[in-house]
Image (cartoon, rainbow, N blue to C red; front, top):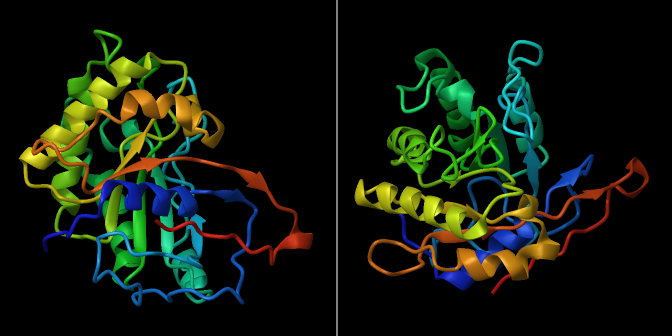
Amino acid sequence: MAVKRTPFWQGLFTLFSILSFFSGAFADETAPGPKPGTADSSKSAIPRLVGVSLINLPGFEFGAQPDGQYTAGTNPAMPPPESQIAHFLSQNVNFFRVPVAWEFLQPEMNGKLNEVNLKAYQTFIEKITTHGAYVAIDLHTFARYKGQIVGESSSAPASALVSLWTQLGAVFKDNPLVMFGISNEPHDLVITTWATTVQKVVTALREKKIENILLIPGTDYTAMKSFPEWYKAMKVVKNPDGSFDGLVMEVHRVSLLSPTNRNTKIAALSA
C-alpha cells in the first residue's frame, strides 16, 4: 500500500505533540480523539491526532544502554505481554511506541537479522496494527552500536545503520501504520556528521521504495529544549527527490506524572 506523504512542517508539529512521552502517565479517558482504526488519514499519512492516546511498551530494548553497550547477558530482552495490547486498545490507545535494541535484531554488524528475534518483534507489531493502531518502531540505540557512535567510528560506519534499516524496512514497508524511529535519543555526538548518517539511511530506504514515515532524531536525547539548536543541522535531511515529505522530526519531552493527576489532559499541537 502506498503511503501518502505529509508536508514537512505538518509532520513536525504533529509528532512533536504525540511524542511527548510520559513515564507513569495515564490516558485521559474523557479527552476527545479517534479510537483505534478511526483516525482520519484522508489528507496525509500522519493524521491530525488531536486527543491521541499513546503508550510506550518497553521490553524488546532491555540491555541497550545510553553509552551504546548492550548488556543482554545481565539484562535480557523481555517482550511485553501481548495481553497489554488488548488492555490498552480497550482504553482507546491508538498509538504504540515499541522500543527494540539494535543488537537484538542484528547481532553482528551488517549481518542478517536474527530470524527468531525478528519474528517475535514483527508478530508483536502486527498484533497492534491489525487493530488499526499506529506503531513507532523505536530503535533504542542512542546512535551507537556496541559502544561506538555510528558514523563517527570506523568500527561503526553509517553503512551499518543503513544495513539494519533497509532490512527492517523491507519487512514493514507494506504496513503504512508503522513508522520508523531511526534512533532513540542520540547524544554527545557531532551533529553535522549525524545528519550525514541519517541522510544515508533516508536515501537508502527511499531508493528501495520503502515509503514509511521516518522519525528524524537530533542530539541531546532529542530534547525539546535543545531542538532549535540541533534542528539547524538536521533540517538538511531530505528525500532523494529533494522533498521533506514523510520525514518527521522526533522531539521528546518527558514529564513525570503521579497517580494523583492521571486525568491531566495533554494538549496536541497540529499545523
